[in-house]
Structure formats: structure tokens, C-alpha cells
Amino acid sequence: MKKNIKSKLKKYPRLYIFGKKINGFIVDLQNFIFYGLSFLFSFLPKKKNKIVIKSFYGRGYGNNSKYIVESLLKSNKCLEIIWLVTKKGIEESVFPERVIPVVDNRFIEAYHLATAKVWIDDCRKVRPVYKSKNQFYLQTWHSPLRPKKIEKDAEEMLSSRYVNAAKRDSKNIDLMISGCQFSHNIYRNSFWYDGPIEKTGTPRCDVFFKEDKSVVDKVKRRFNILKNATLILYAPTFRKTDTDVYSFDYEQVVSAFSNKLNSECYLLVRLHPNVAAQSNSIKFSKNVINATYYDDMQELLCASSVLLTDYSSSMFDMAIGRKKCFLYAPDIQTYLENERGLYFDLTDLPFPLATNIEELIGQIEKFDESKYLKEIEEFLVEIGNYEDGKASEKITKILLSELV
Image (cartoon, rainbow, N blue to C red; front, top):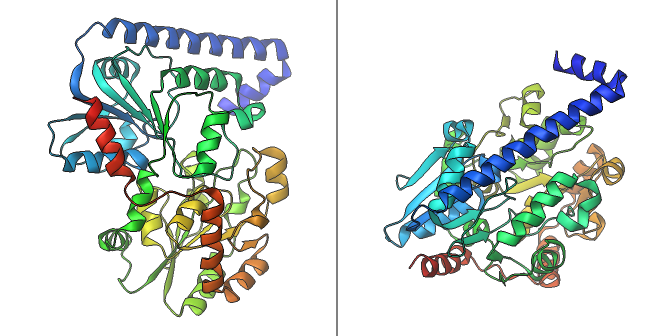
């Protein structure tokens, strides 16, 4: 029904434009009300031990904030940790006892942000919020490094509303963190931010430095996979246009990895949250499993021996973990034309690249692990990597000093 209405409106441009103006006016009004609420609530007393977290616009318990929280909880300090999350995010995530998940709405978010000492986020705060001088806002962003251009580097592909929100958000940030010199330079030059950037490393990548098999066991239990089986994760990024590339001969790929690794392999398919609904149209089987709605991508990366992706930043997580990663990018030309540009030429990266299934099978069959690991180390030196598995600890010290 909505599609029919939209198509009819497009036949009458003035009416369609008028509709967009009305919608924009409503958003502006909601933002004005939210800012007003946050300003009014700012007169309430601040709780010196209160931290308010939001991750991926409220999608759930994960990413950098999860690992920071786990480190904070080990400190045994008396902290009030509020996690703003959607109703769906609460249903799909498991939160620690001492973390309070709160279903996010404008009134609740404005109240909790106004009364907290510390804010933590890994995406932009798109709603304009009043921040008091004695509050501390940590922006972690959501990846150690990324192939796709972001913020000012991709400004022509972003809406003016987002750009304005991003600039406004950057004015509130007190600290950013980075995991390598390459990312540090991106934040400094393209984030509309001129404050301090700590070279702490990336909290979500700390898991790669721990010899903890419990995460692997947890993931395998969740999907009823035998302990001695090998996990392959297929995690492509989202597209604004063609999504047919997500479907290909999965069984052929599983067979190729099984032969190469001499192990029974299972392919976990995890589509990006922006296109999660597309997973409903994929044909799954015993060895091809839908992992799209698993709440923590990092645990899937940790449990998997191999990642298959395209333009996702997860490729760099695997590099940091010295784990195998293959790139499958059949739509590379159209992607470059229709989506954001890339910081890297994919052919210059250490990951085997294929643009069709035949090439992918060939890359799997001829994969040389020792050569691959050598190229990974060279790449990490090139980007100025400073991940050491202690990012969460370093950030915990910073936050506790602010909470005094």
C-alpha cells in the first residue's frame, strides 16, 4: 500500500515535494522537542557514577561498548550502567546483571543523557542533545579500520540532515579512540572533530588476543554444531541497490573449504542489520545456517576460522586476529559507481579477491597460509597498527578517572 501511494505521489511532483517538506518539518519539530527536554533535564543533579550507552542506534548489546562494559564491571566500582536499546534489541540480546537495558524513546533518552556523568556511543547521536560542561562523551566509532569512506570523505553521498547531525555531534565529543594510525588520520581529517584521540586500540578486537575457547563453544552450541567442526562466516556489507549478490552457490563454497581445510565445515550467513530481512529469502540447509540475528558479530568472527566478505570492515578485524579472510565482490564496478568510495584498492589488500564463484573456488584451492600471514603482518605495519588486546583496560582507566 505504501509503495502504491509513493508511486502515485511521484506522478505529482509538487505534492510529493510538499509531502517531503511536511516529513522534514515533523523531524525538525521532534528534534527541537528532544533538545528542549535534554536542556530542561540538565538542571537535575548528575549521578557521578552513571554511564549511558547506545550502540548502533539501539540495536543491542555488542560492539566496542560491550567489551568496555565487561572491563568496567571487573573494576568492582559501584556504577549505574544504562544501555539504551530498542524493544527488539532487548528481545535479541542478553545483558549482564549489572547493566540496565532501557527501551529507548525520546523522553527516556533525554532524561538519562542529562543525568549521566559519561556517555558512550559508537555511532552518531542524530538527535540534537544538550550536554553540560561537566559531562564526558566518549565516541568509539564502530570498527578498527574500514574500506568504505566515511563522514567528510563521503559527504557527497550523505544526506545534508546526517552531515549537520554529524557536525553537531562532533562538537559534543570529549574523546575518540583509534586502533591504528590510518584510522587516527581519518578521524582527525574527516570527522569534523579537533579534540583528543587516544591510541588505545579497539575494544571489540581485544577478544583476538585471548586464548578463550568459551566464545567458540558458545557459538557452536547456539547453532547445534559439533565442537570439532570448522566455521566459515559469510558477512557481506549492505547495499542501497542490488542485493542479489547475497545469494550464490553456498554449498559449493562449503565443499571447497571442507576439502582445503580437511574438516567438516559450516557456513554461517550474517547479513548486515540494514538488510537483515533479506535473509528470509535465502535457502539454508544443514551446513548453511542463518546467523543474521546473532547479537554479537565479534563473537561470530572469533568463533570462525575463515571470513568471507566484500567491503565490510570485518576484514580488518580478521587481519588483527591473524585469521583467514577472503573477499567475494562480484558487483565491484557497480558498487563503486553507486555506493561510497573506498580508501583502499581491494587488489592491494592482503586478502584473496574473487569477482565470481569460479575465481573464489580457485582462491580457496590455491590458498597459501604462510604467504597470507606474511602479507597480513606487512599490511598491519603499513597502517600503523597498535592493537595489543588491552584497549578495554586502557579505556576503563580513562572512564574511571572521569567518574571520580
